[in-house]
Amino acid sequence: MSLADPWRINADLHCHSHVSDGVLAPEVVAQRAVDAGVQMLALTDHDELAGLSAARAVAQAAGVRFVPGVEISVTFAGKTVHIVGLHVDEHNTALREGLAGIRAGRDGRARLMAQGLAGAALKALDGLDADAIMAGASKYAENPQLISRTHFARFLIERGAADDPGGVFMRYLTEGKPGYVEHRWATLTEALGWIRGAGGQAVIAHPGRYRMSDTERWALFSQFKELGGVGVEVITASHTKDQYRSYALIAREYGLLASRGSDFHSPDESRVNLGELPLLPDSVVPIWHDW
Figure 1: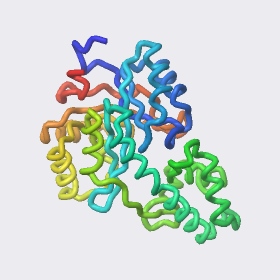
Figure 2: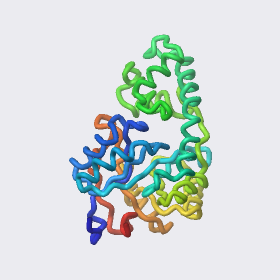
Figure 3: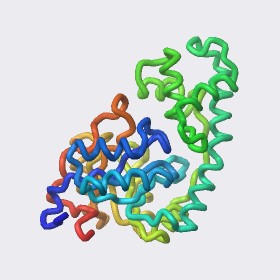
Figure 4: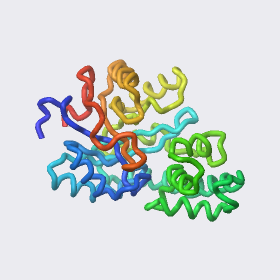
């Protein structure tokens, strides 16, 4: 693939399969990207690398450049932040052990979420106890080590608690709601250390989603840069057009490269399909400019 004009490349460097909280198999995600005209694809499952081989085989067979990736859950300033690692070596021992450590804490968190929902006596759950709620959410999790709020949201929708994932999260799964459980993820230092140690490039995922003060946001970007982070998602499904412009400015301010990714999870739940976002603006430097 020629990178003579990197701004015109249809790159999707953030998406998920059922290995984490997507609904499609990795090879199906890759084929969907191929069919959508994606020219460069990264599968970035949450805290897991197991889907990369299957997605790579499909993408490369179709002539799509495949980028091995991962999305790491980080606790920063008491909030959950996601850091995408691109071009990581999925066989790197430190990265694999670090991600395994994050996954190990998810089961206990999920059981506490089930207990919270059971204790709230929600009409939609009709007296289900915590074990039944846990079982209901688990049937949506292809990888039992990675059960998450998204899987509980799908179960709650099945039970009629809300019509869509956004409604479920707002009513039951965000801070102060019965299904929310605070969890300590990796530190920013750990996440960037694993990514860089695996030969990858670290990117702040969907920064417009984080509810942070200006001071907290400045601290995140400053520390990220100091720790060797190189990129930020400028064009992503959860950003508005105004945020496209804002984060293009922030990328230039902090000397960061710009990334683009749909954060695709499901044909029915995602805001946009793979590869259907606007291209990066000419005012930023694409992270893939020198690949």
